Amino acid sequence: MKIICIGRNYAEHAKELGNELPKEPVVFLKPDTALLKNNADFYHPSFSDNIQYEAEIVIRINKEGKNIQEKFAHKYYNQLGIGIDFTARDVQQELKAKGLPWEKAKAFNHSAPISSFLDISEIEDIQALDFSLQHNDRIAQQGNTRDMIFKINHLISYISTFILLKTGDLIFTGTPSGVGTVKIGDHLKAYINEREMLSVQVK
Ligand code: MG
Image 1 (cartoon, rainbow, N blue to C red):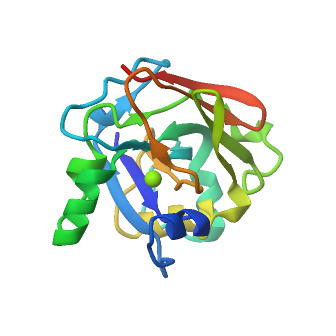
Image 2 (image 1 turned 135 degrees about the vertical axis):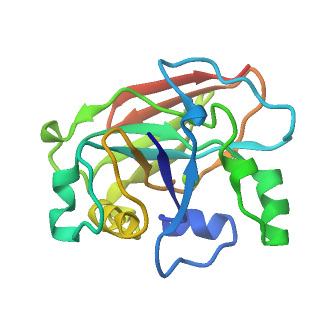
């Protein structure tokens, strides 16, 4: 399986990092070795002094497809969850300044904690879903999927013109504003609506 991530998909987040609003989706990948499941601890890597959390709604693909039309995209997924796109912001800034790819900043081991998944049939409207991230005792990020610049079906259609989607692939759909730095000892909890979905201790 592969993890496909979308950058800058919420206007307020693009602004907080000083990025322009994208005219088409910003796409990058993480390998399967980035996954962190079952609320396992995250060990802070030594190569960065600025690991930041980005809480994101994650879509799970359940059918193989390429060149998927947007109107059929809903047939290619049936579950969603929430994940954290951990980013070594200091490393990313260096790579961006040099025009280099982001992998060292984005694709490192356990940079993609994910929750369990909910059936989409249980959700009234996936494009009107509240989600949030609690950093220690404070709600740091609050988003709603209606604020996505590129909606889920559009993302699936767009990605599938370049990359064959396969069952089990995950799509991280971008983070709202409020990203911040973690340090050893911190605790993160991610929620969809009021439901606690993911808990990560930073060690
Ligand atoms: Mg992200």
